[in-house]
Amino acid sequence: MRIEDIMAWAEAKMRWSDESPLECGFRYFHGLRVADIARMLAESRSEEYDQQTLFLGAFLHDVGKAGYRGPDHGPRGAEMICREAMHMIAEKQREGICNAVANHYMRPRSSWLRGREVPELRYETLLVQDADILDHFGVVALWTAIRWSVQEGRNQLETIDRYYGDAAWLEEASQSLNFAESREELAKRIALQETIYDSWRREQAGIMGAKLVTGDE
Ligand SMILES: [Fe+2]
Ligand SMILES: [Fe+2]
Image: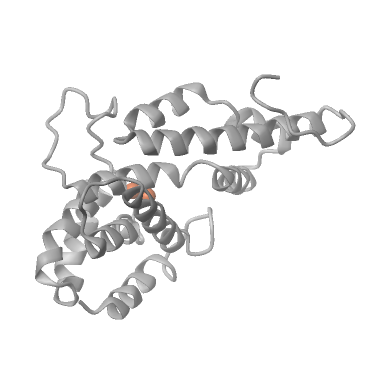
């Protein structure tokens, strides 16, 4: 396994040729964050997993979005890895990494997949799926909300209205998670971001005094 070479290959695809308005080199840093979250989730559970498969499956899961926007970026990413990076990956990890990349949004519990055929998913893939959802919540959600709003011309109040308490989206995200540990982390992240949105809304309404609002207020 030539991990430095794979990192350099992925950096060229996901950091330097990524035009996302969300963050400079968004796919690259999102990949690293998802890899960290996936590892922490795996460590909080007792099932066996392969560390390298999990790291690279998570880190590379969105590599198919390099210079491309499409719903099939999972299989596209797996094809890119097959074509350009397979020689850098140890044989025993190849299938698992491609399984995670190709299927990272084929979430068995999502409403989108209900009634459709679910592909064969490895344990590492299920961890990557949950970590990918979790990296869209918490403080990172505020960052991306602000970045999108700048891009789309929303002011602060419009940003709060657009992103705060989107019940359908929160419900779908929670239901789509594979593990109880992920749902627990999601609940903490949502509570944190909603607390900040509440304080933000108070400021916008001219209410004096910063105040952290708890859920039962
Ligand atoms: Fe993706
Ligand atoms: Fe992602």
